[in-house]
Amino acid sequence: MDVRTRKALERVATTHDLSPEQTESLAAFARVLLGWRTSNVTGLTDPVAVIDTLIGDSLALLEVPQLRERAGAVLLDLGAGAGVPGIPLAVALPGARITLLDAVAKKCDFMRAAVAATGLEGRATVVCRRSESHAAVNEPGRETYAVVLARAVAQLAVLVELAAPLLAEGGVLLASKTWTALREEGEAADIAAERCGLRQEAPVPLVASPLDQAVCVVFRKTEPCPDWLPRREGMAAKRPLAL
Image (cartoon, rainbow, N blue to C red):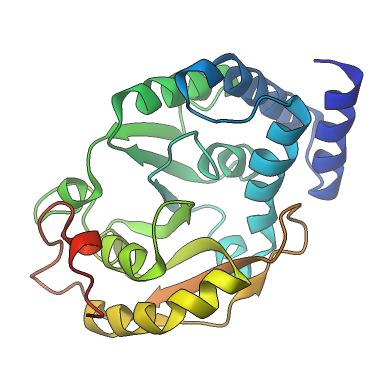
């Protein structure tokens, strides 16, 4: 890792009070990310951009009180893709266990390599399937997780519907968005939330994120999951509940 990239990583680590061991785990994650970019796991080619845009933005979620309150809980990263925010947060939260969920095989292969490189094998599990299958009745993911994380996955109404059958009652969906996206998507998300047994809470500005307008949109599960959830694969996006 060159000097410029190392300084960027140390800046992020200092911001979030990470130990030297945690910092080295994130360095290993960055190396895996950069090594796999030809497989389109991430379109970023600048190592500093990887540190800031992926790792730094992920760790900004540590500012969210609903996550800090569940630092030792079972989390799920929905549509985990490049392992963000799940892997950086697992590094920063040593008491947490996390499921990295994605339906794309090559992304799951990448995440398994990243989990091994960061030393998270005992606490991070890669599940390669659709969220609707993982959350179906009698499946291991149904109403299991204290936190569902989502970054750059889908519109809020879709995320609410997909997260509802995954969350335990009292659990929270933490969706990384921009303020503009929240204004555009919030009303439809509230309609979906009412049908799915969730309620929106006050959004949390992500001050430590390097991205403009970064905000965490929070939905808490207040009621048991309706029996009709999840719908068939892809229906949340094709026929949103708000229509």
